[in-house]
Amino acid sequence: FKDGAAAARRVNSFVSENTGGMIPNLIDSGAFDNAEAMLISGVYFKGDWETPFEKNLTEEKTFHGISGSLGSQLDTVIMKTVLFDSATLPYLHTLNSDRQ
Image (cartoon, rainbow, N blue to C red):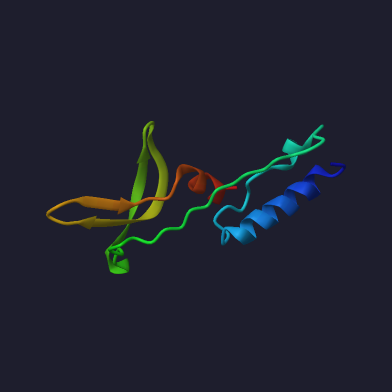
């Protein structure tokens, strides 16, 4: 790879287009330094809930991880019933990619 930055842009563009923009930066240009070949894999899962969340129940909350608060406000959808509690939260990597 003579131009790592161009290769990274091409890979990231392909991945972003094929994940609906959910994975915009899978790889950085430094990964191509001294590389003769590259095998790249990324997974994007989009599933629908059997019982969808209601948009009007969305609240902005601070996300708390294992090491404490990440200080990020994000939309959190919470559903509580007599039988269970459930929430929708983005993955940590998703939060970090928004900051790049």
